Structure formats: C-alpha cells, structure tokens
Length: 564
Image (tube, rainbow, N blue to C red):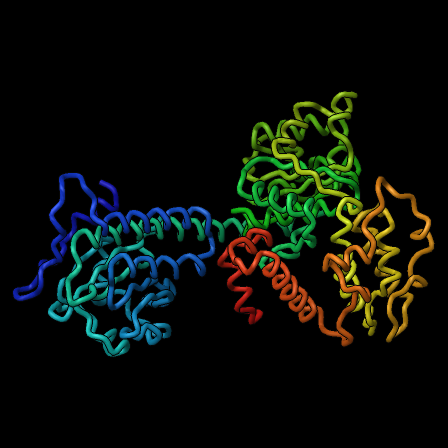
C-alpha cells in the first residue's frame, strides 16, 4: 500500500451531532463528472504542469496554496506548515486566506511540532479530516488566538518526502459553514503528493549545488557562470533575426538535446549558451565553460575528464574534470572544431556512454551534464574533408543554432552602442553626453568583421579618448571605420533608423550623471522592459516570451521597477 493509499485509510473524523453534513452533489448519471470535479481536475492538471517545470519553491508554493483555497472553497484559507528540524517547531511560510483570516499573524508564529492535530498527522504520516476542531481535545487553540478566527472544519495532509514527513497542507473552514468532505481530503492529499515531489526535487538541487561547489574548488581552468543567482543573461536586440534566435533559444532551453552554436568570432555564442542554460530546468545548477582552442592538447583531456593522484608527473592529488564539475548543469565547449582527431574520439565516447574515466583511474564515473558546443568553423565542410568526425558532429548538432553576425542585424546597433557606451562610461568614470549622429552613421556603415566584440572594443576606445563633457564623434573613432570593406548591401543609415523610431535623430545619448553599475544596470533593464512591453502592445505574456522570462519572473521585475 502506498503512502497516499495508507493516508486515505486513516480516521476521517465523523460529523458531530447537529453539525451540517457534507454538501450533497446534484443527482447525475453514473460516470458523469460534476462541475466541482471538473474544476478540481483542471487545477490538478495546472499544478502538475507547474510542478514539472518550476523548481523555485518561493514561486511555486504560494500558487499551490492559492489554487487549493479556490478548489476547496476554504473560507479560512489553506496554509503550508513546515518542520524546523533544528528546533522541532512548526512554522507557516506560505498561506492563502480570505480577509477574515489574519494569515499575516502566522508568519512569525512557531508551535511545537508534537502538539495538536498537526502533531498527530506528522507522527502518523496520515491525513485527517476533523469536522469540528473546537470539540477535538488535540486542537491547539493558540492558532485561533493569533488569527482572530474560529476554526471549525479542518483538513490536514502530510508532505511525505524521502526523509519522512516534512510538513503538511492544512485547510481551514469550508465556505458557508459547511464541513469538508472525504472528496475534499482526497484532493488535498493528491496536491500534497505533488508538493512533496517538488520539495524532494528542490532538496536534490540543493545537494547537487553543494557537490558542485565542492568540486569547483578542485577544478582548474574553470569559468563558472558569474551571473548565477542573478538576472538571466541579457541578449540585446529586437531585429527579425534576433527574434528568431531568441525563439530557438527558448525551444533549446526546454529540450534535453545537445546544442551546437554556429557563428563567426565575436557574435556572442557564449552569451547565447548562458541564456539557454538560464532558461532551462538546470538553471540553478553549474554552468561551466571551456575554450578548447585555448588549452594545449596535452592538457585538454585532464581538464575535461580529471585525473587521479600519480597519473603523471605533477599530479599530486585527485582532481575532478569539468564534466564532473558541471554536476547536472551545463558544460559549454567553445571552438570544438579545433580538437584533434584523437581528442574527438575520447569526447565521443564520453557523450555516448554518459561517463568519464579520470586519467590514471580504473573506475568510470557517471556524468549528467548537458553539452552545448560552439564553433566558428564550417563543421559540415570539415566532416566532408575528413578533419572532423561525422559521428561527433551529429552528436553536437542535434539542435543547431546559428548566431547571426552584426552586419545582418544593423537595426540593433544603436541599442548595442548605447549599452556599451554606458558600460564604458561607468568603467572609466567619465561624464560623456552620448554619441552624435555622424559617429553613429559611421558605425552603421561599417561591416564589423569582429562583430559585437569589435563594436564593444571600439566604443571602449572612443570613451578612453574622449574628455569629460564631450559627445563621442567621428574624431574619437578609429580611422579604418570610414574605409572598412563592406559585406553585401550597406546597412541602414542613421536617418533610416530614426524614421523608424529605432534611434533618436540627434544620435545616441546617455544620462549625464555617472552612477553605480548596479543602478545603471537596473535603469537599463527597466528601460528595455518598457520598450519591449510597448512593442508587444502591453501584453505581458508575449513580452515575457520575447525577453526569455517566465510570466512570474517578468511580473516580479515589473513590480520591482515600478512599471505599470
């Protein structure tokens, strides 16, 4: 018998004499579902989908208690009680209640976990339905004193995780003075099962993060994601090719397939890889990056797979490789086209078997990292010429994404230039007025063979040359910009973009005052969200999709920035 089946076999608490019986359902044909049952099934479906993709309990659990309150018509609301293992007390971190129920009073409240109806549910691991809590000798009256509410009918369903009961879902008073039914309890038990799985998953993620942090201390040549725990990596641009790229990024984030990012040097392939990771279910786990072309062939194998002490001269201790450091997250392999044939064979085996063998070790280790690879070479041509293995290419290219060069998205250049200008101003500590229209026209006419990276360096150089109070002009830009070779058709002029509303006709301007980086970043984020929101006609869902955020995450940002 499962834990839930066992729970449903527990004592339900009969209705006391004189109490109103559970509300009778309307007469219906056999097998016909009532509107209440259909509504609850719909809510269970919504919750199951949410629990499958959301790992942040701070986002998830408030929604759970609110949906339960609606489904159960709980006048006193629904709360989640959790056990503090250090103190042996119950606390109430999440509650959804009506105005009559002062749930706020519970936020700082704590009660012994071995007392009351809740204590019995935790000890037994079985759900309970109590028709009249006031008549139950176990009832802990201190709760009513805090909430200024008279508890009547109660449902309590334990959260049964792998380590045992960690808390419970607790519903108080059905609307209209009615008592909760056995069907109500069955619904709450089902939701409690979902929540327990979510808590287990969150605890597992926490364990994997701790493991990754431990391994990270043993790894070298590691570039961990500096943006973990912060906002998702920002990809600037709203041109058609960038919208297509962001759509592919969103699809790739939902898929477990290996991704191959193809594009010229300087297009921002690593930023795209970070964005895919940040939008995926692995977002809370490590992102590890390695430029395969920057590591000598003799060291690349030990960096990727690790080694045992004594495996070679200088190996004075065991060291984990980057595949192990990724620990359930994402490993980004840049410039994979530069790998030697021998290294390609070893990497292919790792991808096929899902395990690595440290140098000098006899025992393979399982790995669970997602691979995102990147190259600026034409790997299909390399496969045809025999310099790159076809089987490895098809492993990488399960989900190919082309990152467009800057010359194919000139519409984005003014916004990129303004962003890099703010960045350079903060770094140099100067007071500059912006970029004038002539300089912007020069930037738009150039083909940028070095792509976004070259544009950033050019803006940084111009800021270094400019004096306080000046506007960036043609004289601050490199001479080769005026005579640079163009690829294909010339990009749009500053006046063309101005007529479309892409950039002010007087050029790109920034705030005159120098601000801390955090403030500048927040202001840019707010302005960018407002811009995209306006483009989407005020539709929050579409805006969230374009920005690569969940609707909940965007709503948090709207509130934080005071937008709408």
